[in-house]
Image (cartoon, rainbow, N blue to C red; front, top):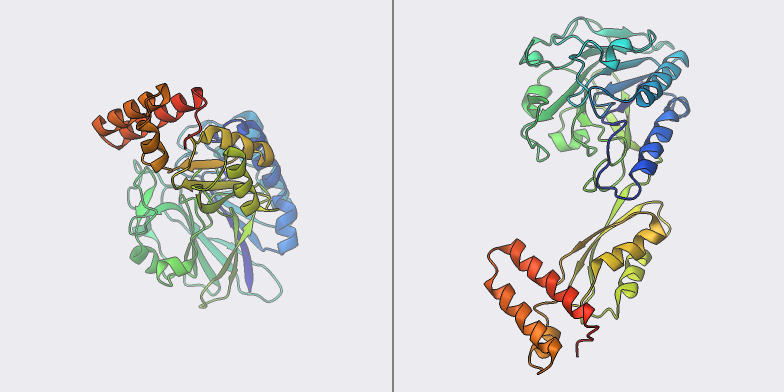
Length: 377
């Protein structure tokens, strides 16, 4: 049996714009977790590491990020764990000064736009050899490189390494990566196809049994990347289906807690307490959707601030409908300033053109009533 560590989409140096307030801290957490990769590979006793592109977030990463990448990949290789790496679309090696062109000699970096002879490794111990076929996608040099794949007539385990999007998969959104299909990849006669590009872990079971897998991003780099992130641990034997599992990185993930009906909540602190109770002791950042008809003008920013104070970061989506609640309708019947504000808010909402304008009317009403310090009946 051969054991591989399949990693992609680390995106060293990513701006992490959605992680307001903790972007710098999270970038360093990703670097630190990546630095521990040699120790993790040794603990897992892997025979090789495959890097399926987008190790860097840009084609010209910072010197610090290049140094981290070289340090880690060199340590892996010098510790007896061969590394085979390709660039992706974010860090394509088209420029002469690309960091991919100056990786440590111990690292096998594939920059050719067409398939050549495989990189063959002997894991020893009487086990079958490993053959890795890879290309660095460059549509100006070769728009359809997969058609040029030829499996060598050699015993052992045969693996294809690509940074590509599978167009018939639900994650497909277009983009600049190589475009392929499940049928095309499944017809390669490979024992495993290691992919980079999509940021969610997608094991072979999602490809109809074809030996195709996305390891997903090493850590969430956008706030919609919920769930565990890390590397794929792959166990391979000639002619047998791959056994794949996700080995999570130490960077705190975003954990989707689902929806919270806050109709009966007394205030923002109670809403924050409910979110916190659902997260428990998980070393993660909560993601939650607030629904229902609260009896007060809920300020979701206050809830978010309270949750972030406890857990460092949180994503809260507000789908509550205060403006349509019985509380606002009752308030609109009152001959008071607050009643006038409520009536005006309802009129503006009814006259709003489109969902976005209606949502803005609701937010304006909440802010106005909160400024008046109104407690709805």
